[in-house]
Every structure is written in C-alpha cells, then in structure tokens.
Length: 489
Image (cartoon, rainbow, N blue to C red; front, side, top):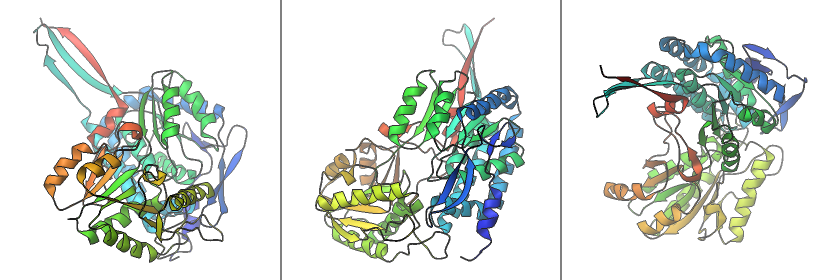
C-alpha cells in the first residue's frame, strides 16, 4: 500500500456513535456491534447499536427541525450542499479508504465512488434553487390556477452496503435541496463511511436535527417503528427486492411516499456486428465495478452465435489475468466480497450453473485462507433455463449464453422479474432504435460500460423499483404539489 498512514487517518474521520439532533451520542442501552474488514476478517471498529428509542429520538429531531429547514432560503440550502461537495472531494483519500476497509472494493474503485457520490451534492446544490410551480387560467376562464412545490417532510433514508457513500449522497442531497429533514439508517456492514459523511455535512453547516443518523445491527428494529409513525412522510430504500416488497407493505399503513431502488438482472447483449474488443472492455468494467456487487452490474451476457466463442474467450482471458487481493494494496483489481454469506451465495450459484451444464472458462472456485474472496469467473455455454441467467448474482461472475436473433434475445432478457439496467453492443443504430422499446428496463447503455450519472434519472421498472434518483427528476420524489385556485374577478 502506498500510504501506510491512510487507514488510521480514515478511521479518525469516522465517529462511531449515533448522530441525533446535532449531537454524537451512544446507543440508549450502550450496545455496540463490530465492523469487519472483509479482506482480513478483522474487526476495524465498533459502532453504536441503535435501539427503537434512538430511532424515535432521531425522528423527533427531524420533525422539530422540519418547518425551519423548509423555510430556509433555497440559496442557503444550495450553499450548504456546495460546501459538503467540496469537503467530500477534499477528503477523497480517507473516504475511499473507509469504503475499501469495510466493503472490500479496490481503492481505485472506491475513489471513483467518492467522485461519483460527490457529484450528487453538486448537482442538487444547483437544483435547490430551481424548485418551481406554474400559473395558468382554467379552460372555463373562471379560475386562476396556481401550483407550488413544497417539501414532502421528514424522510427515512435506508442505504445499502455496496455503495456506502454514493447511495447516501444520492438520497441526502435531493432531500436537503427540497427542504426535507431526514433520518438515515446506514447499512450494518458498512456504517463508517456514512458516519464520516454525516460528520462532513454537519461541518458544512447543516442545522441540528435536519440530518440524523442511526446505526444498528438490525435494521428492522429501528425502521419498523419509524415507518409506522404517522409523522414520517417519506421512505427511500436501496436494496433487495424482497426487502423492498416488505417496506412497501409497511408504508401502505400510513400511505407514505416511497422511492424504491431494488434488485437488477442486467442483460449485456453483444450482436455479431459489435466491436468485440470494445464489448469485452466494457463487459469487464460493468461486471466487476464494486466487485460485481452492484444492482446495475451486467448480470447475464447474451452473445450472438457468430461471435459467442470470440467474446467468451477474450473475456475469460482478461478475467484470468486480473489481480485479486486486499483492496488497500496497490495494483489489486478485484477485492473481497462484503461477507462470507455473500461469497458463499455466489459460489452456490456458480456450482448450480455448472451442474446445469455451464463450462467454467475462468475462475469458478473460491480460494482458501482468510478473506471473503471469489475469483473473477466466466461461465460459457450456459443453457437456457439455468437460474443464474435470471437471478441477480451480485458478484464477479459472467455467465455467457448464446442467441440467434433480436426477437429471441429480447424475450429472454425480459424473462426476469427485474427491470433496472441493460447494455447493448452493436454498430447498427437502427437496431438500437428497434430494440430499445422492446427491452423492459429503465436504463439502456449502448456501446458503453457505465450509465450512472448524477445528471441522469437512475431507476428501474417491474420489480426493480419505483421513482428515480439523480437528474432533474431526482428531486421530485422529495416534493409534493399544492394547487391553489382563485376566482377570476
């Protein structure tokens, strides 16, 4: 590792207590839980294990601060977000180290997450001053119609472990810009990054009570009472589809406004006329970003029959040459998966695919020793009907299956409950225009590796969720409309 002082500096940035009403405090019962480095299996910190009473205190603070924050001038909210952006960029090294130590992705990948996550702060700093409305005359000519947007109110933001900074900024930034206060429930596997970021928010000038953070080893014990509390007006969740379904059912009790960014099973489609070398480069990036633990990662690789062997062989060659190890070490290209449970789940999916007839072309077996590592794996000749083709893998595994024509590949790609992101490689732009409306996914990347951008609306269809994060659309989920009518004199 190039900077041996970096881990200590990073850990010093992250408090280990709850943040409620502008104060760092222990859990009400004094309990803590460990944060484990997945590359070494060592405990790197112990953080407060929040209780239902702590969750209630956080919501109390958010509710008390709501009116004042909503009345704060948009420019002032904007400037706070801009300062938070600058502070995040200034602390890139420490934040990236925290991400790597608690989540496992390589340090270079973690630095990319910091840059990506910071952009939501800058983007929504600019959107804060653009919240508007409209005026018009009713068609009958008897009423003046005024519409205004106002903050939806106290919001519960539940963030995942795979992008502990970017998923926090993607939710907190539009909430702050819109004038909403919040309670953040950070993922138990990766709480340190969120704690460090909330510290930076406070230092940037976010008033007491506007942002509160509760860490807990059990999400449900904190979030269930909050969702049932009639004072809460919004819940935003990023995570698995099964958990999202449960939260939606709970949210119906008080008719909460909801944003759900759930699972994905992204098809990566390569046609005969594609630039195969480019497709391989893009496949490596979109498959292995964040160790493959990303909802928008390419999940199933569909290669047209004429190029299937060339694509598979070249992808396997790259995967076989990648360096796997502790993400804090220089030159590591793939780090440890976040937990033993995650690694074992990936291994089981690969073993099942092989049992169905898939051929291992790269990787395929977890190494022995410490750390939750799984090698970059390519599976060739995966038969139709194999579960790995329609289930979310969430790991560094690329199953390749063959197709013959456009209709076949669209039908097979759509044969999953998910509909988040998709990727298409072809030189034929008329084909792109034909296929795009046939693919049941909220996002499509054409001849590209990445599609996430703070300026674009990220989100899916079907059971991949509802709502959008990022873009000018991203603030809408934290606003509601009020219609005012006055008679024409």
